[in-house]
Length: 217
Image (cartoon, rainbow, N blue to C red; front, side, top):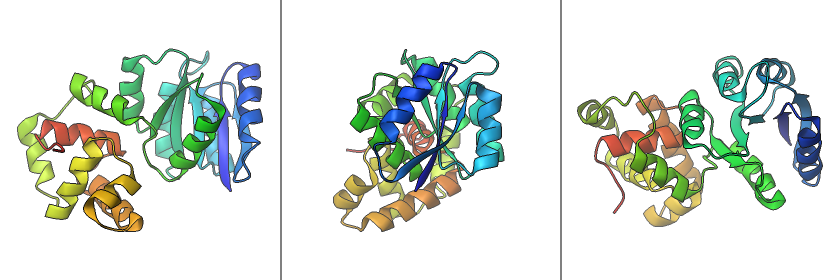
């Protein structure tokens, strides 16, 4: 069962998201929060697997809360919710450690699918959004090409091949198919890559690959 938190300052929005997620047999909404600080506390108290955080909340927004959740509740994967789709917010959330970013008008079936994907730690940004972030190079504070290349040198040849496909926005299953390996093997490679590169999620790794000039054909 995927234990989920919904954080939004609007009670009606929380109720609507809960209603959608209640239709999934493998997802349980175990907590709600009206602001960022309450979300951080709830993740500590309820062992949350996936936290859905509104970007803009009075009394402590979701962007600020991401860092607290990542620090205090490392088992929790955070996905951001917004009605705006502001690229600057996407960048801030991903740099803080969020695994994805959803618009509030996401279709119910896609919301359920996204929670399931987020629970695995995979990015829930569409490939085109990943590519747009890379192209615009929004993640400020880049280490630069030379430093990125030195970090990439820590990887094995196979891990570099996997990272190339991660940078193209491919899912674990797609990477496994492209490289003729099992999905579990692809997932294990990605986990090792994130550890070696000291990246919080695969989008950060994709940005680093872009800095190093490592891209999919």
